[in-house]
Amino acid sequence: MIALVDCNNFFVSCERVFRPDLRNTPCVVLSNNDGCVIARSNEAKMLGIKMGTPFYQVKKLIEDNGVAVFSSNYVLYGDMSRRVMSILSGYTPKLDIYSIDEAFMDFTGMGDSEELLAYSHNMVKFITKGTGIPISLGIAKTKTLAKMASKFAKKYKGYHSVCIIDTDEKRIKALKLFDIADVWGIGRRISARLKSIGVETAWDFVQKSEAWVRSELTVTGVRTWKELRGENCISLDELPNKKSICTSRSFSDGGIDNLAILEEAVANFASQCSRKLKEDRSVCGAMTVFAYTSRFRDDLPSDYIHENIYFQVPTNDLMELVSAAVSVLRRSWKGESGNYFYKKAGVIVWDTCSDSAVQGNLFDTVDRNKRASLARAIEDINRRNGFNTVRVAVQGYDMKWKLKNEYISKRFTTNIDEIIQIHLD
Image (cartoon, rainbow, N blue to C red; front, side):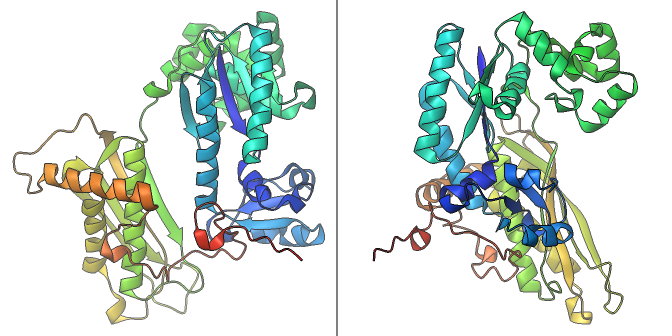
């Protein structure tokens, strides 16, 4: 049996841990630059606030209904996720972290359905009490069915946060109630195509033949089809690496007209890409750097920087990526010749492959062994002292390009200067 743990309204729940006065108050969390709503409490959902809605469109609704608003605090959310996953690891011989708020647990050989149900209810209570983060748990024979069960556990209070699909009867009932668009592995475009031919539910989908699914949805669709029928055939280790990784930001106010500040921003974007590649155990063969001025400012000159860089040897090395990204800006900068204000910039790494399958180059000018040793030393220092304690100098510390985050909460768990203060009268 496989369990899927899902943290409920995770970003909002993280904020409420340190603001218990908001537990029954509608809350929303905004995206970078306070642009769109990316997380909502159940109370906010009941007000009709939709996921992805631009903040300015619902600002009056939020103010009229006393909705608490938070800017994204990814440092806090990442640390709270680590705490939840750390506790979960003590409940299973194998834990596969799928995302910041989801993880699969292997319950094989850990008892029958009644024992698993009791075990899971105890785990839900312990984690909720120990971290303040409410979780839902779905248990089934496959990962796809476990994802489905977790949604039922979250939706229906009668399950007390734990739903188990352990019989064919329960599986069939769940499939008939489950919208095809909500099935793990069925994207928006595929679900629209399936609905156009009458496949409305997961049950309708499994009634199709394997040959039909293979011809319409390829091998990936067949795996989902088999999982819904109770055959475990998806391994997280087999999921492909990301084909590309992008880190970009829109700058607040009028934009950036200073090369040094833009370099600092792009250097940090390249650093983020390096970190994500390493987390994914990948390397990239190419990188794209871009920056452009606002399309809506007719009173200012416009410019668009865009350049591809191809590496001799696929890499995820911090210094190599940062150096390449900054060099693009220095070659393309036009600030000296006019009043250019760059509104958005970013770094995309692509042509990725596993870091265990890197083809070397006879004419490579970089000492890869020495660079790898340095990278390990930097990662070890940062792991013990905090992310970005050691960084490339061009990344700076001023953060003059920082995002708009008017509603940011404190980093209660990772910054000694921002811990909770208790005042006694």
